[in-house]
Length: 328
Image 1 (cartoon, one colour):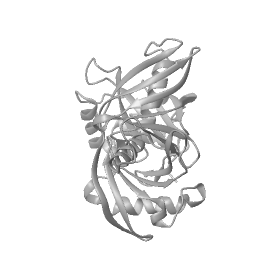
Image 2: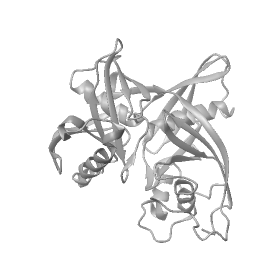
Image 3: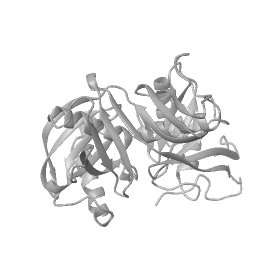
Image 4: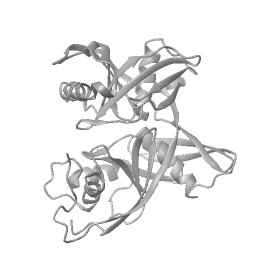
């Protein structure tokens, strides 16, 4: 860990309950001309979790995502230069197992952070777009302002496409039909009832086990997340569903999952249950809500709230035998 700065400053947000830790200083050099190329660099210097000699960037990821400074559910982003002048900045998304290609809740947190810190100027009462280059493309977080405060964020994702429908997947809960959609990362959707489960805190251990089994059963698809969903009574705004998204190696998204909501919108549109302009009220396992809207040509918008939870100066004591920490 000698290449990691001894003090690492972060600004932390949560979007609908899911954490996002932002690092925009003290980063080691990350070769690459684009955000996608920088992610590839990160993956070849330990980001895959298989390199026994991780590079300085991955040292930093491990330090911030592991206990005692983080936890197994931690998520964050390294702010990097954009691909070109069309975006305000770029970001490398990270979690305990490596680097993802997309992160909707993180995009919303970054939009709020950019405006709250003055990095992107914003009026007291209006909407302001924050353009961000992510590994899957360019996305926009529209930050809503009233009385000098950020009141919400809506992000417009890269185009989402349906990849496959009703793929038979064997699990210890039985064989289920899985639907696949790519919304910057590949998500698998499975109805929780087909597993004999509901989506609740009580059933989280079984949902995580099912998510891991489903992901492992589709090794050729490079699945990022498994969305286990259930129907709720429609609201006056339209469809209403609850989900838990199990991603990476058994991580649980506390939010309704931003990019995962894009995937759900595309599949519901393909089913004929949503038309362009229709909305989905999407709940998380902890009761927080995103509002998703289906637009033409595979474009989706997902809105919610992001709030700052703190600013931190994490210290790595060179005499600390735990070093970058541990995972439970």
